[in-house]
Length: 116
Length: 114
Image (cartoon, rainbow over all chains, first blue to last red):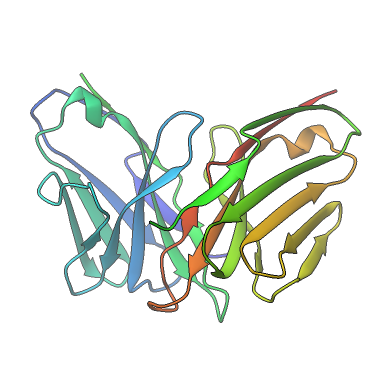
């Protein structure tokens, strides 16, 4: 199946700093990617839809200035958590749909963000 | 808004027992997908159901899509320890692009005792 990578897998940062997370589709092109946030033993909360060459579409309640998304190429989307605070600590996971007619989502391995 | 409710939240079974998780949407779904997330891992696609009343099987797993395309279930027969993980349903609503977003259920965490 298709492979999606994420980098870094874990990051610890100080409050007030910004953190960039990369999501790459390794063996297919993805005009659309999705960014989720997942709390321990909880579901995946869709944050935004990343669109190659255009602005991201954010879900209600997600601050676009806080979570900057850039989809500069057909294989790379980045999520930047700006001015991070402890409440931003979470598991961030991206996905990209791929396939003919089914469009199953291939998920990256996720990034564990801890803000101290 | 569009929501997919999934129950139960947790399920503990003895190895060999059956397991079922249910999903329900208040509005009609275009299709529904099922994912499995192993502890510490990321969600992995299991299957997609599209047609009203559709039933699909994968070895010990049986997936159903309701006649009204508002509910779905995943049934595992004779669970094994390898079935441990969180099972998510994810619904896609009509409209939007083919790559349209999925609305995930809350997930059911399955624990299997040997």
